[in-house]
Amino acid sequence: MGRSGTLAQTAYAWPALVVCAAAGGLASLAVVTARTLALALRLRHARYGGRDEEAAAPLDATGEHATLRPA
Image (cartoon, rainbow, N blue to C red; front, side, top):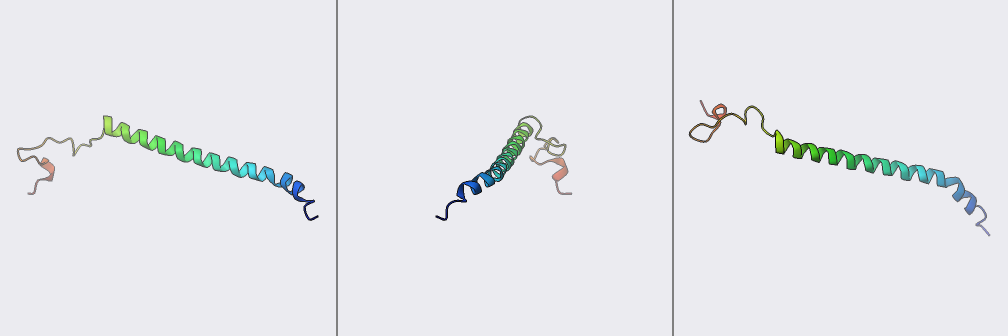
């Protein structure tokens, strides 16, 4: 009785559902890509170049960096 418009409404709304699902899929792909890239850069930095100039300074006899000793 009151269900005559159900098939027409579903046929009218499905493109919007497809667009929403595609947008969600693209957003999740962007998040996964960004997290993977950040992890890869972090691992690469830790493995190959994780020291800056101050941390690469030689230690003195007490085991402290020369630039960090009190005056």
